[in-house]
Length: 329
Picture (cartoon, rainbow, N blue to C red):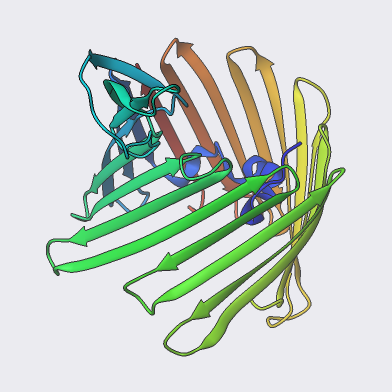
């Protein structure tokens, strides 16, 4: 198994406890569309229980890395050295092994595996992200994220670097215009055992702003982890178990050492009813229970229904109901 990123050490239990509970929004709509030339469009809209509406439009273009060149054109002309092939330009000169002279001029196009994502939301915020994976070196992903708020003329610029190998996963996040600041994390793993740490640094203040640590164990059927975040003041223990092909179970206990001795607890389970539907349930230490149902109505159309109930205040209007539609073409 590959080593996860620092924030993903507890991902199986976090996903079970937090994903696919549709009561968080009164109504949600997501439409996905893919074009033949690798452009994917996504439109999302949400209506909160307070009546606020938000939406986002996203367009993503992925140029998948081929790892090789495709020849477009041959020209039989003589060109003298020094010329050599390059992996970073579109023109390559073929050299004769006998004379050392270029006998063939070839025009090549190399796919670098770039992904361009452009988003625009109802807050009138524009964001552009450019990703390059495995083009700099194997296991390295570089991201550049630029944002712009037309109303306030505010700009943002971030650079993220990821490096993943069999027993190591490191990341670095740089905010170039705020601070600048840097957040770095790393996870090492061996035979399912995981250990990781993260730290934030403010360049202007020349000080560490935050730090966290985590340990865990990951196996094909279950994972367990302990994290200490917020400068090692908030502790959480998570557990996830895939009981069989139909049943999943998980729990999370958390304690904030600065707020008292109270320990928060959440327990959740997922049951796959059939190949196209599943149900989820969770309850926390405050007596708030949540139910969810997800069904694939037809290929590309998914319906999600959810509700939450405060079992200690059943006579009060604290309950929430939500629905979600997803269309994927």
